[in-house]
Length: 201
Length: 261
Image 1 (cartoon, chains in turn cyan, green):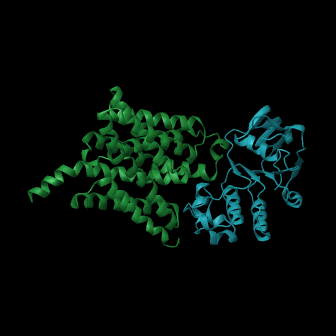
Image 2 (cartoon, one colour; image 1 turned 180 degrees about the vertical axis):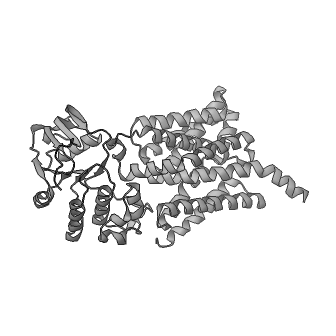
Image 3 (cartoon, one colour; image 1 turned 60 degrees about the vertical axis):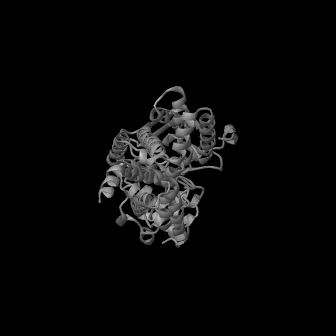
């Protein structure tokens, strides 16, 4: 994917300091353009996930501003999505919640579509959630450590999905795997550890 | 023949009221389980019972005071953020203690308290039936929208906030349905029989079903079958309805032994 020229950014972070009870990251500035996969890297605790949560309204913006393009739709694959212990939802039903089409999903996911989530492994559930977010047709896809628990084949399938994204869509990707970031991102921004990064959220 | 006609006439309103309540409570129980709040089905009915008894002491209609108490508890829960089963356990302890303490200090309160905790389905009136019909209509009209909203919220918790979609409409609607189901269920079926319907059908069905839709349908089949069987058995064997229903639902739990698909 390459950023579209002359287009409005999907989202702009302007000197954003974000956190929960207090700021734990920032000030950070960047833009995500249509057609772009922007990577965020940094040490554990640097506040990468907090920045994503600030965009989704879970974390608080203490200063600075997040500008969204009008009507922006967002899907968020959270780090460590929780696999519910006993809900009879199938993989296919979860995809439909995000309006993701079955036929667009990788071959690797097909056998899981009729399987109840309770029988998924942690890695399978992680992969399904990532596919649901990417398949959702939202303008901006937020992927927080999407390769956690995934085997090589699943990571390869995920790479295929990212490579095939429509040019009007953008991705904000957090990963601790430098090789994955380098392989897929148009740009990578390093989020430095700040003094307040050590404070408990 | 006359006897049968008389019985049919006598039990028609209670039967239909209970049947519609069973449908609503069973569905709401499935949503509570989805939200990991299943103990609300036991905590809130006890608050409703305590509210109902309090109403008799201060001169308010039982239904109104039960609604006010349950609504207040649900409101506090909502304002306090995401509730856990710990909070509903606290409501259970508080409601049970308050209902029995208030009942012990007034003869009328004692009668009402007994009725609310054990159930008094045969005394269901047309007013109860109209209330349940209204609730059933609300659930029917909003089912598809609410069901989807609740599922999305569970599996993609920040999806609504990320897309600047307000969560309060579905939270409020769910609270209204839950509080109404709890109050009407407690008034008609009793606190424990209502809880049995909130808890058992979805617990059994979710262990057996291979899909959400299938889980809801199986929950309804279990709830409705147990209710009809309990209603008939209670009349034919001249036994109290509430315990008959809870014992039947307890027996249904044996289905949990069937390996999940």
